[in-house]
Each structure stands twice: as C-alpha cells, then as structure tokens.
Image (cartoon, rainbow, N blue to C red; front, top):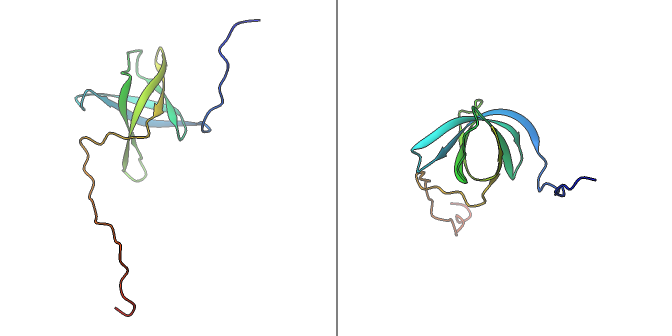
Length: 114
C-alpha cells in the first residue's frame, strides 16, 4: 500500500470551464492573464501561461464576455504545481479601490393612496 493523503470531500461541486481571467496583486500594480479550468462556488483551478510563483493572496478578475461585466474575487492560494494553481475564494472581498453607491435603508412604507 502507498501512503497518501486522505481525499477530503469538496465543499461545493467543481465544474470544468474555460474562462479568461486576470490575477491582480501588489496593490493592483502587478497582474497577468490566466485561464480558469475548474470553478466552484468556493474556489478555482487556474492554468498559468508559464510556471511562475503566484502570491499567497491575490484578486481574480473574471470577465463575462456576454454581459461585459467583470467580477472581482479575493482569493487565497491553496496549492501550486508547475503552471497549475488551486485557490479558494475568501468570504470577505477586499474592495480597496472599488466604490459602491450607498443608499439609505428604507424603513417606512409609502402611505396607502399616495
């Protein structure tokens, strides 16, 4: 028998995909293009252009070609083997350079007939 690590069940099902994305780090001063090969609600597997070191924490910008919208997700590197990287999405997204419009919460309803 061989000694191997136990296989832990995934927290979310992983789906094969082929999406373009960009890894951004170093306060948005450094970035490079990657391809998303597998994706789930909790993380991704990335294919790099060449085998170079990915930082432990980075943002992943995922482009949606149908809508033109870009999603930005904070990630933590879990593993790296050559030009393949596994990363998990962090629940708290760092939005340091993104501003969102804030609205005051609506606590009262409009009166009937108004």
